[in-house]
Structures are given as structure tokens and as C-alpha cells.
Length: 81
Image (cartoon, rainbow, N blue to C red; front, side, top):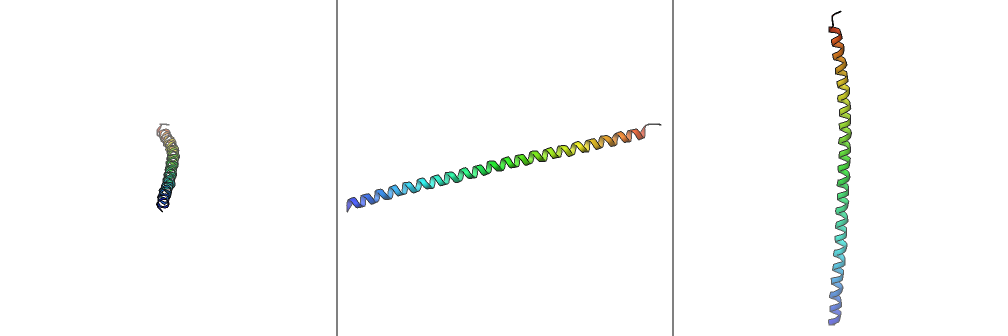
């Protein structure tokens, strides 16, 4: 009976260790998945910010060109004839 109890305790310890190992692995995998999503989100936000910046620069450039043209036209109208 003592050997049966000892075997049972050993099996219980082994089962506990195995369950802990599985749990630790699952937690680590979940943490890695969350990190990958976070990294991907950072890349997406960065890409979106770069595109917004590019588009803003393009709009500013067009507005500057339009302002330059308007100033030139105004200057030509102000020249004595």
C-alpha cells in the first residue's frame, strides 16, 4: 500500500509538472502573439502616419504653388502699362 501511495504521489507530481509546463508554454505563446499584434499595429500606424504626412506635404505644395501664381498675377496687374 505504501508503494502504491508513493507511486500515486509521484504520478501526481509528474502530472502537476506537465500541466505547469503546458500552461507556461500557452502563456508564452499568448504573450508572443500579443507582441506580434502590437508590433504589427505600430507598423500600420507608422505607415498611415507616413502616408498622411506625404498627402499633407502634397496639399501644402499645391497651395504654395497656387499662392505663388496668385501673387504673380497680382504683381502683373499692378505693373504700370
